Amino acid sequence: MTVAVIRFGGSNCDRDTVAALETLGVDATLVWHEDGLPADTSGIVLPGGFSYGDYLRAGAMAARSPILEAVREHADAGTPVLGICNGAQIGSEAGLTPGSFTTNQSARFQCEHVHLRVENADTPWTRRYDHGQVLTFPIAHGEGRFEIEEDELAALEADDRVIFRYCDREGNVTEAANPNGSKHSVAGITGERETVAVMMPHPERVSLDDIGPTDGRGVLRAFA
Amino acid sequence: MTTYTATVTVRLKRGVLDPEAETTKRALERLGFELSSLVSADRFEIELDAESEAAARERVTEMTERLLANPTLHDYEVELDHQ
Image 1: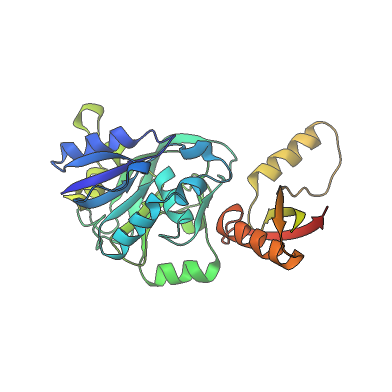
Image 2: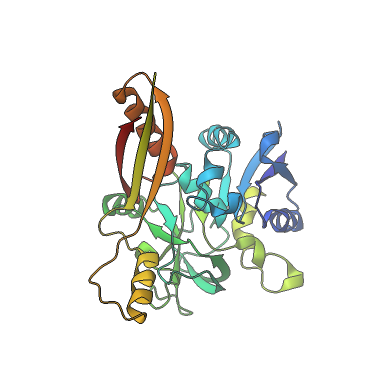
């Protein structure tokens, strides 16, 4: 039983993710995308980075690589699948989740800490948090603005599939606290199955005691 | 078989924010130009051999829908020329 952390050319949060999972006692394996998933895969992370140099659109190339077919089969069978940052872009480009992550409203790469409000604490990714809890996670992206058709967004919200929204320190969702112009300040959502999720903020960067706060562990504990 | 050149133009749907175009517009204004709006688009030129214009168009349309454009964000046009 191992969590496969899939490495593409240009992934750069793959080793951080393995380290964060291992600190939680979760067995994790780096998997080169051309090698396919291990037979004992029990979870999958699409990690952050700049796969294929963000050519065409961030995540577009990796989303069409053959291993994503295997990821989709696992996702459909209930295996937990998490896309973080570039992994979120890959997941949405691959249709694992609706909508798209595109150029920040600022048109700049943004690397900063943000506050997130837990919008639904009844998913594998948020069960360790309280509904409405405010977390602090880092973001590091140029294309993180969540775009989606209005009717699809309404359906997502009606189904309680938004798991995190950007907010201020007190948990208020405001335009000022929305770092990238995402529709309705959406920072993370689930797929049709709650076992599939994508998010732009980086839980693996706030999971090791050595480097400070560990707000991100709750997300990764979905694999425990 | 005929050789066709397909020109695929992919642009953001109306109403989708385009921060890069906004930034480019502001840069032009800083250079002293006057303009009312600026829209950017990606253009792909694809050469391919096909039995007919319809077959070429069908293949290029599939390429566009599967990779070149993202249906959440983009509209696209395909134009075909044969050589």
